Image (cartoon, rainbow, N blue to C red):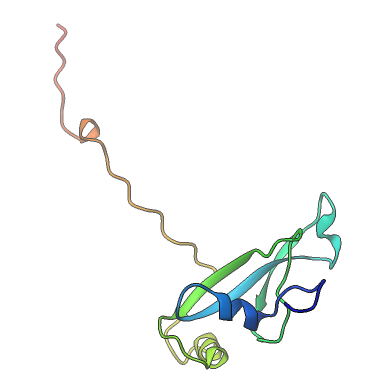
Length: 119
């Protein structure tokens, strides 16, 4: 942001975001403003939907959870989010973590009966 001492506005984050598409942004922030410098500070995730809103800052760092809503790069981001949130389009759950990658068993761990060689 141009103003020293303030975090950037959501508009600036969106303009500099490296991936095309429509996204919903959440920023890590202190539960009590200004308390993030304390050792036992409590953080919360704050949704940011207003392009003029300053984004949250946690311990002098911008930490975000970003969920893709749409692959298309368009200008009506707020309308897309409101449509998804109100259920008139398909459901998007912004709290869902990505599924873990499938694991492959090594050939020696495959389920095949082994015969004992000791008598």
